[in-house]
Each structure stands twice: as structure tokens, then as C-alpha cells.
Image (tube, rainbow, N blue to C red; front, side, top):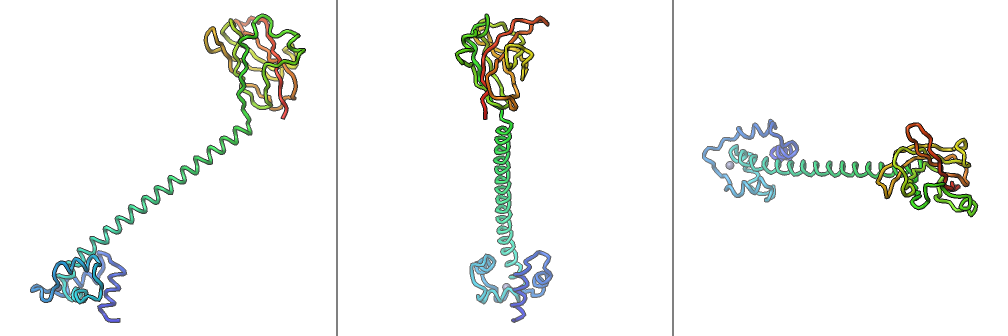
Length: 241
Ligand SMILES: [Zn+2]
């Protein structure tokens, strides 16, 4: 390997501003008369690697400090451009990796929440008592013919109960009862009504996850300044499974 070839390899390997060999080359071969210097187009082509290293001009720049200075300026600009492009690409790659990580975590979160909700098993049940009357609740006939107003899964049930027409707004106590007696309640809740005259509703949550399947009553009573109002009972079914 010739010494100039070795120098070239060193330059190629390091290509740094503080390269001591390049520092020497910049000053070791002054050529104020610019004897034998290739034209600027050739220098540019060399710096941009558009012509091969077998070109005679390539050998010249290692023995001519002003030409090496010109070459170095052009080459460093090209390397800075490549480095900038690489940095941009790296940034883009990093950004897309982060985007993928975020999307991945979001998917996992959705799955976890979905699964948790299924395990916890909150069921939203609409119970419409609009036309059931406020006078007495359902009569014995209705109970006897097996009619139920709602089927409640054995879960955490969120009941959205639309009260019978002309019900009074206010605070209501609701219960799931084995029979028409409040002492047999297996779940109890209370809520304040929302809505207007035509559609007054209460939302109450019952944990029925350990209830035995079977027929029950949804009991409902309005609380009024500590006074107990009459209770109404509506047959419901707690489904198994
Ligand atoms: Zn020269």
C-alpha cells in the first residue's frame, strides 16, 4: 500500500474536523502558484464522489494544500448533508416506533378494560314501568301467570327504571326481594329521580352476582321527609348462568 493510499484510508475512516493528518495536509503542500491544479469542476466532482479515485486529480489533492482545502470544504458539506438526512431518518424511525408503542399500549388498555368490564360484568337493564300504574303495583294475577317485567342477569346490574306515569319525583328506595316483604331483600339501593312528568326515571345498581336464579320482586318506595310511603312490587326474574 502506498503512503498516499494509506493516508486516503485514514481520511476515509475518520473524516473528522480534528483529524491531525488533514490538518497537516492543509498546510504541508503550499502551492501559491496553483501549479497543476485541476479545474474547479473536477474538484467539485471529487468532493461529491462523482468521479472515481483513479482520476489523476485525486492524487494531486494529496500533494497540494489549497486543492485539499477546496476538496475538504466540498466533501465536509456532502457528509454534513448525509449526516443530517440520517439524523432526520433516525428521528422519524424513533417517532414511528413511539407511535407504534403508544398504539400498542392503547390496544392493550382497551382489551384490559373490556375484559375487566366483562369479568366485573356490569349489565345495564332498562325497566319500563310507564304503564304499570302507581296504585298497587302488579296484582296477584300477573304474578300467577308468570309475567315478569325484567330479566336481570347475575352480575352487577345497573337498573334504569322508568317510573309509572304520574309518579312523584323525589328519592326512592329500591330493592330486590324474595317476597313482598322488605325483610327478604337481597339487594338494596336508593336514588333520586331524574326527568320530567312524562318520564321520571331512577338509576340504581344492584350486585346480583351471587343471587340464586329465580323469581323475585323489584320493590320500590318513595321516601318523603322520613315518612314511609306505600311500596310497590313488580315481578322480575334473576336469570341463571
Ligand atoms: Zn492543486
